[in-house]
Length: 382
Image (cartoon, rainbow, N blue to C red; front, side):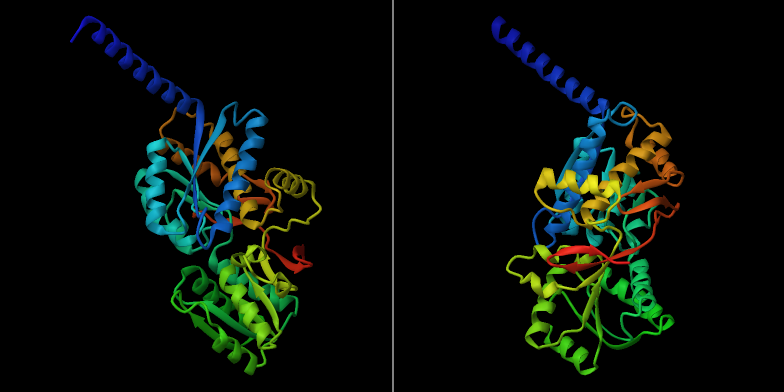
């Protein structure tokens, strides 16, 4: 090797070393927050909302000086709502230097990732993974209600507000989210004086034609149809019910949030549809209105429940970091131990509830709300 080639080679090596050092300094200077959810695919409405809601919170926190003077940095990966792709996204984030995870967004990928994050002892806070199994591991918490809690709360709301006595249910038996909610709804319905006159299932392989399920509900004279399902199937059910001149009340859970954004869906068919949710964008409190205004300014639309859950998730992480006094130069596992303990000690006033607390098993405590679709928008119900 010539003298000059050797000098150039050494200079290049030195430059690479300085670049690596700079990357390490950057990572040590910021808290590295990962995010995982569907940014494409059938449930992209959820993932995009979560990414956007989390970013609003991160921007606010950073602009206010960070957390204990430390900035937050987010890297959000697309899992397309698929468990295997979610695990791949998790591995990508671990290579990036993730210290805490906001995600995943939907339940099945969340369970898959939780089974990986527990091995690495990485703190995981899912905004919207509602299956019981999502928080089975001690390092995982959630912001949303669990499936059983959604089922119980829905039956209680329908019963206490005397919305109906004859109820039909259409649910997805191949989905843990849907079947989990239905099971607890059916148990609580009896306590609320509700008669389930028809309970019809479908699967992921038969989720386009709901004429049989709707006809049975209609023949049973159901006054209300409970839909513990996602918005895509719900839009088809509402369209097909209208073609059958079947017009009961429709009531769903957080999976229906997004129905107003379904392409080529006549949103007038969703008029008066009700859903259980911890967030109403038209609420008059200052915290909600500030969030809605910031979201609209950044993204040109009104935030849904998933965006609100993610917004609160980031602020919960902020509160837990402050409580535990962790620093960004700590190992992710040590951060996890400290932040997990702090989660059981903090109280958060968020847009999805005031005075939110968490139990050691990862469950939030907050009051459920309901919204109704009026004139193409969500309106809070009493």
